[in-house]
Image (cartoon, rainbow, N blue to C red; front, top):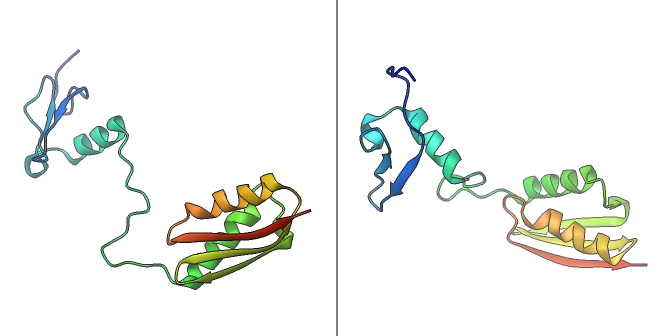
Length: 128
């Protein structure tokens, strides 16, 4: 393969505690003097995912969490959210009402618990 200025070997040798990344065939990677795409490729290859981590001190307001919860429950194909009431207080989501099965009760909780800003889910749903 022809070597040009844009080519580098994406295989990773090691990751040390000092934020230095080593790539085979190239000199060690440091954030100050390297192509930013190389760091992105490393993050993708190693499975790093920082989605959902906002700036320090950032918190979603209860109204925003409420909207996210309602939208997520509405869009889900396996839960009939028509009988579910949602209340949010200081990041805690309260689910009340009726669903058709135990599976739907648990699935509603699983859908909500990983949303940004949700601290806890209090599942008070009943099934018939």
